[in-house]
Image 1 (tube, rainbow, N blue to C red):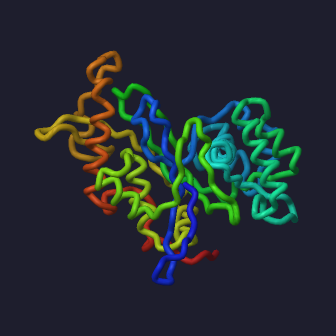
Image 2 (image 1 turned 180 degrees about the vertical axis):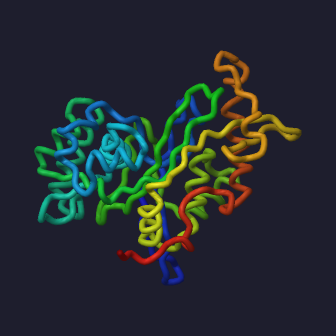
Length: 304
């Protein structure tokens, strides 16, 4: 989740988040608006990647995620996927000016490099080394962990992160996995979903509700940094009720007794996208109080 503060017509400011639209041909809720992201690549981990990072060590990252090893690869994947899918680069040159902030030659060079990276002809880490970049992983905060319910045609074990959008850079979708991009306030995104204007799925809705509690990116990022060491894993279960389908979460009544769909059940798989759409709308209508995540009233000034 890349966030920024944008001016409003009333003269104030509002928190906005970047969302991209999934390709319409995607198996899982094609056309939905999501945050930039993708799979962790084997090359995102290891000593080579760690040498290009600043602000967070391999051990610190693994501890935050609750994994024995390989944690920093998730942060490197965040930076790489954000560049590939949205054209934004969370990196800096030591002692240099902000990247991609108005230099036409640099913007053209990185646009060409992005094309090469997306085509598989240039390794992202090689680009960073050639440009003498350090990946700003210390500015990226772990936010949420969702696992797709069983019965889905494709399941994801997804870690969500949040960071400030790099100043001066312009987002642009990749025209491959994503087909559009938009900067939008969480409230506007949720309202457009309720009105049937855009598609958003359940975990994205919960993240939008969580970040929508904050009036500024600084307050959100401070809260996220403090909460990043206690992020729960959430694996919903989709269950039928008298009015269709509903989502139950760990800790909800009936979660342990919820039936688990047979992965080989073709009918369950075929109906899953529609079930996701239905429960996503219900989650949106429930409002932000039901969403997990950091809250403004839990933010405390930094100190010893």
